[in-house]
Amino acid sequence: QVQVVESGGGLVQPGGSLRLSCAVTVNIASIYAMGWFRQAPGKQRELVATITRGGRTNYAISVKDRFTMSRDNAKNTMYLQMNSLKPEDTAVYYCNVRPSPLQDEFWGQGTQVTVSS
Image 1: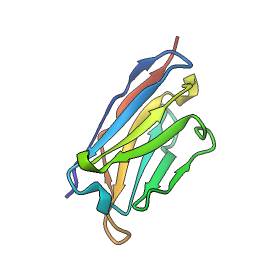
Image 2: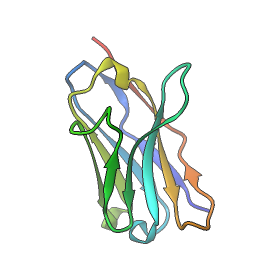
Image 3: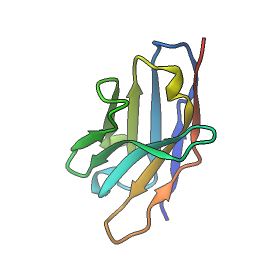
Image 4: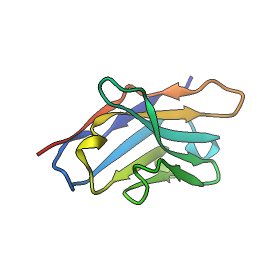
C-alpha cells in the first residue's frame, strides 16, 4: 500500500504562482510513473502532467510552459510548480502514483487550488 499526500494548495491571484507537493511512502525513484490530475466543479478529472521513472515529463497543452514537474528522490516527494496561474486553473489537484504497469494506482486526497482576484 502506497500512501500519497498532497499539499501546497491555496488561494492565489491571477498571474501568481503555487508549488504543490506530493509525498509518498515508497522509494520514489523506483516508481514507474507519477502524475498530477485536476478536477474542477462540474467537470471530469483531467490529466495535468506526468513524469516517468526515467524523468521524462509530459504536460497538458493547457498548462505547458506554465507548469513544471520535478522530483526530489531523497525526500520521496514530487512537485508541481505552477506559474502564471489563470482562473481556469481552479480545481482540486490530485497526485497519482503507479508503482509499476502491473500494479494498482494510488491517489492522494487532493489539494484545492483557487485562482481568483
